[in-house]
Picture 1 (spheres, helix red, strand yellow):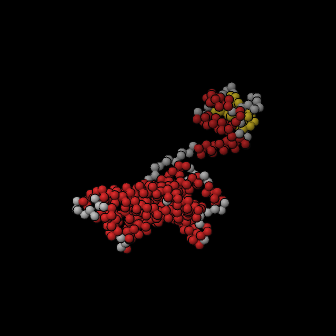
Picture 2 (tube, rainbow, N blue to C red):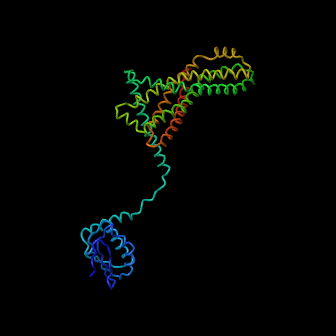
Picture 3 (tube, rainbow, N blue to C red):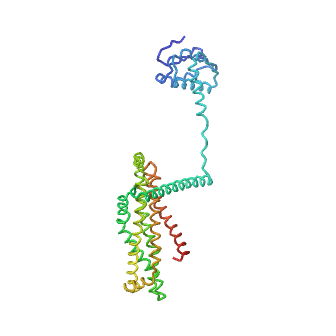
Length: 377
């Protein structure tokens, strides 16, 4: 008869190799010696084995797992097994281990490469959700703007002035430089064609209308999309990552009212003024190139500009400017609120902000062209 040693988990094999005695505490702290001993003992046993478990004083889930492994190993060797003396608690643990083991042995579902239809549907659902979020955002901005009209004291005038300085005043040099260069390049290209027809003076008509109607507001809007829209996205996105937006909501401060509306109002004002600034420098560049290439004097250029360019061209450009400003500011702020919890998300949304702003600006410009053509402007 084997002797039970409390606190020690062990096994003994009878002399006829037909009986296996499990002894002691089959708990996690006493199982290490058995892990290497069990496979060796299992191979020595006869074809029919009786496992005596009545001398197991304690068994936890680790011991049950080892006991279950022993049984499976004996079965894999083709041995007939009979278990005696196993307590109800140990039987419950073995049953649980057996069920879990069956579950774990189930094959994992094979991963399938999604098809074109699935990817197309996933893309459509994602874009639809973004569209719903954008329309919701626009609705919140419109509601907040309406409340600001009814109660002007709620508008953050100081924030608007600060934003005008950042989006307008600080952008004067880059807008002036690019508009000047556009005027120079545009006049140079047109002058090459008109000079062959001896129609030099008409360069004023073409460049003047093109700069006032298209290039002035469009170049200014593209600069603002790359400079201002991305800045709005990065600013609001960083605040969201740092949980400052949540802090504002907790304090009862409306983020749309304090962060978005001042930026939109400021950019509408700034972009309109910057368009006038761009018209001046674009015309100035055109005038210098006309003098250089076609020998059209400055006074002659200005006189022709005064008589040939109708005011409607200037008004058409000024009508576009505030709409472009609204688009740029709205997209920039919306993408800022779409930022996730990581710094990478800030960079991704900043890029999307610039791309979407420029895309929507060009679409809006095309719509304006059709409307102005139908209205005779």
